[in-house]
Length: 214
Ligand SMILES: [Ca+2]
Image 1 (spheres, protein in one colour):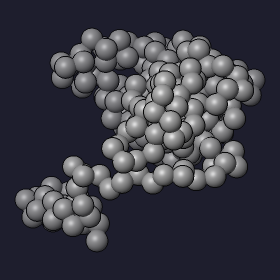
Image 2 (cartoon, helix red, strand yellow):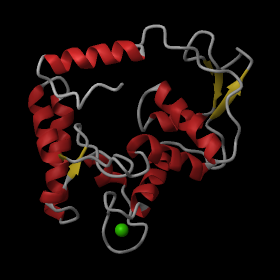
Image 3 (spheres, helix red, strand yellow):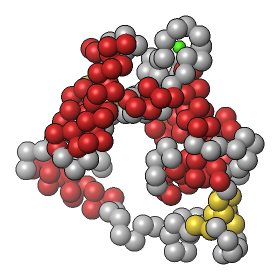
């Protein structure tokens, strides 16, 4: 059940390596450092990114990631890369970005371990009870009882929805069945028709929506 969690994080972070990010990490972090709202955080990430280039682990030209500077298969930010990434395949390089995901997946395991992961313990499970530490993301939807490992997943991304998504993907990867209760429709979300209308209007106003999702 530990390996399934790593696989699920890989799925959520980069669609199992398909979307590792093609934005220059230096460009992304320097832009966000200048932008202000979380300026000091991204300034720290920028400095870390420059130090990684200086160390020779990643070439400047190949240092790409998300719009927020997260890199590779499991989207490590530069400071996490520096602090936690491991050379699991033993080739002398901390490589979380190339086609071989070995180092990235091992680094994710190391990250969870560093943040209090207990081996062999489930993340949580669907429950019919409302007692104790239970989260129900949507009224009328499934309820989940959480373990300490749920908190460890949230250290990856501090969101209940994210951590439930990881657990919910990990369970079937490990052979588990579907949830007993379905998630109700999102009352405040956009419908498909809303999305199509929005994209058409954006396109009409000159924004590139890559075509409406019809
Ligand atoms: Ca390596």
